[in-house]
Image 1 (cartoon, helix red, strand yellow):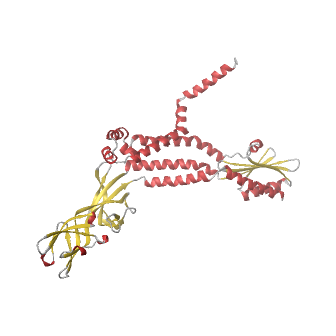
Image 2: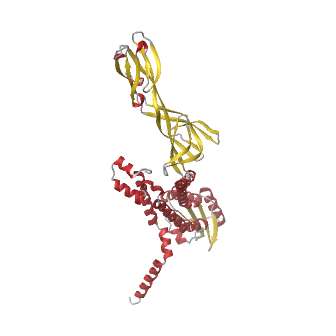
Image 3: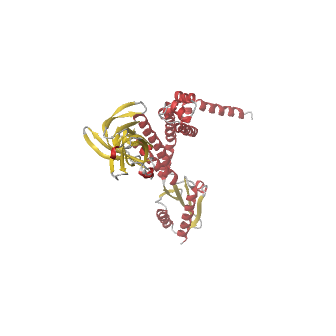
Length: 467
């Protein structure tokens, strides 16, 4: 025990020396799984924050909308930049830290995997092979050369072509499948880094904006929401037409549609392109999404009037606030309307000079004016409103990069989860009763499936050499 103390102290000293090495400590920190998990959790939690707090909004707007504490919202805005979170230094810093972590982990582990793939263990000792859970040994009778040829042919036909080596009087056959599947996880790492690069491209050089174009008008400017300024698009967009369709019997919009034309350097490059909610227009990296619409000016109404006494029917179009003479000497004026033109209030002056208020409805409401009585029967035949289309504009130069990263992620994930590196060794050595044959195998993942396949291969192997 007296001699043990110095040894223990020496070990502690060595350990302390390793802990005191700052380069190793930094390297271990960036390669650690704890850092990966911690960063992922932080990214997940902060992403929830970014989802709950509407990006691009303001503390005042969030307080008015949800009734949350204004002081707390202002605190989040001031110290965490929570209303522009995905562009904040700390969120981009988290992405950078996670990227460095991925790169360091890959640099640390990739050379070992590369060495395993490029330099497989072709002639392991018997103890190593007998330690495998998937193994079998039996004796084969016959000429050694014929058995070797048979083993090679069997592995080539049932599994894959084998590499053959001689060592210490034994013949080693090594066959493998899916060696490159060991790189699936690194393809996934690469895909995450590519996606991050695409996201940063969009974050620094992209923006979201808005344009409002009246029917028949055009614009070459887009209003950037983040900087609250108008910037030139480099081309013009003209709204040829805009229309709204409604659910039957209501004025609830079912679909609104813009017909757009793109003019670049005085030439029409895209003509009469329909844009609806899920069918945007893309030109020169800008994507125009149908977002909203706004009425311009006062509407006009199509009205049919029938004079009961004469049976005379006339149709006319009248603007909001306008007055129109009626058969027999009366007149009508549009005084009000509601529900996007579903109901219109008329001020009617009869032939006796008395004023009467009449409400008429869109025909889809099935409310006729016939039963009201009076000198005239009114029918609403149309609602005409001029609109300005509202288009959300997005510029994201990183979209293609993100899609490339997604493609790599799908490939990497498929390889990492559904493929494995499967290896089979067959060792042939002379014995007292014939040739001793040892077959063993393993896989780097999905052991139950490999075990089933190995058992089948083992049975076929025995049948092959017992026949």
